[in-house]
Length: 295
Image 1 (cartoon, one colour):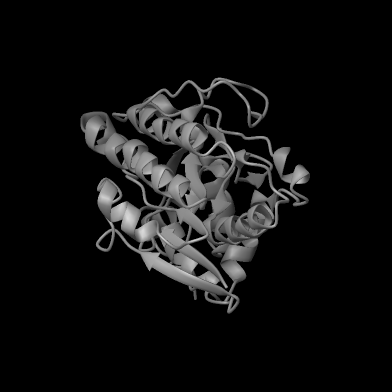
Image 2: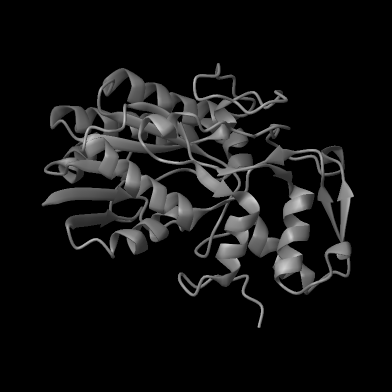
């Protein structure tokens, strides 16, 4: 029986992974939340990884703005912690699927970034995640997988969609930036794809390297907010467009986070579906329960 370890199992993506894997009786799944496994501890990581065929790493420092002030601490988790996992996987021929981010890219393009685009992170969070990507490529050239995602929303953690609908109960109008472009991605759909990639990797159908785990199409935060309001039965005209310079933040954000998805075809897998149809699915799915459900 295939043994699979999920790290970061208490987070938004990690909890969705646990749900998806719960429907797979053919797998023996071990889950490790932050309290169970400190990925910055090499000995603890070696012990946790031992005996597993696949590790899906959803453990991460996710506070993008906080990383600007605490870059070393963020990189310890997002970079060196990944190196610990990769080193442990290398000793046992274990496949590692590392969840990364669009923030390793410069964000100044005007066409979707291919998987082999040059990296050039613009903030501390992206720099730390790039250290992790480089560790996977260096230590696991034949069994390491990096899946970059972006604009995640889901049932089990703070996210833009839930925030917009919470603020709808507090303000008549919301000003939302309309000059950042990306691909909203439901964490549950990403979890399904990560498990499918694990299957393909074990079967020898998926080559190692970088994949882009975002939904197809593109929109802006303004477009996403309007779509979420519409699906929640709220007036989308309550959302007003604005520009990023109206909301300065410690960490600069890429203006363009649209990723290409060509590598999935080589693994015999289609890209994730369009962001809007996925958002519709998220609003209407009975499970997992979503905090943005409006009665």
